[in-house]
Image 1 (cartoon, rainbow, N blue to C red):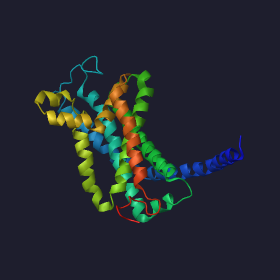
Image 2: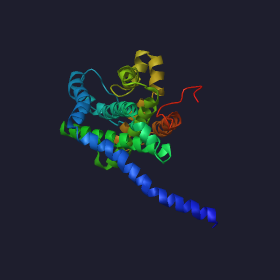
Image 3: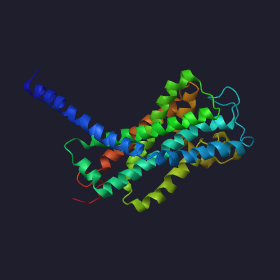
Length: 281
């Protein structure tokens, strides 16, 4: 081993404590903020619970869910909704993380983080991890509530389902991270939320199977839904709930997470904390 190799190994070993402290600071800060605000958890669960309780009762006999993969028998509409509402929790938290990033940038926190003596990729990865952890925490709470309301789960499939939830939450948190590059002001957040969240949620199999669109002749909506990354988050969780593996959905989730994170990493300027404008020095 050469002297340069030894120096590189020593540098990598010396940087590990710095990475650990940065991880604890960034992720711990987000988790502590969340745990100090129990109303934030309540507000995050009101929306999916409203859909779960009210709409599952009102549309119980309206939406007939046929025997299509991954189902091997007819299921109630309440059971069908669970994967979509779990993904909904992650979607809204991903946008909430985006709002937090925009706020931190305006307050100067992101500028301090991105000028720290660590590669910005690591710092953004820690932000992504924090958003993913918050999403998964809220998804688990909602899943427990669904169990209380009588939704049965196949317990041996829970590890695979948990992995699908983590992967889906990572994709949506990475999307929020990428959007925080382009949202310049807090005032623009509401418009961005309406433009991103609601089309993604409603043009997906979260509330109804996609064959309903095909049956009604809405081919253009069907095509949009098939290209919607949120669709594949829902389907990955739905198939995992029954111990099945949807290769297409998992591919979209994994590659989408990498793509959104790469765009966020490329967009953040370590000096200013947001995307460089074309022609800027």
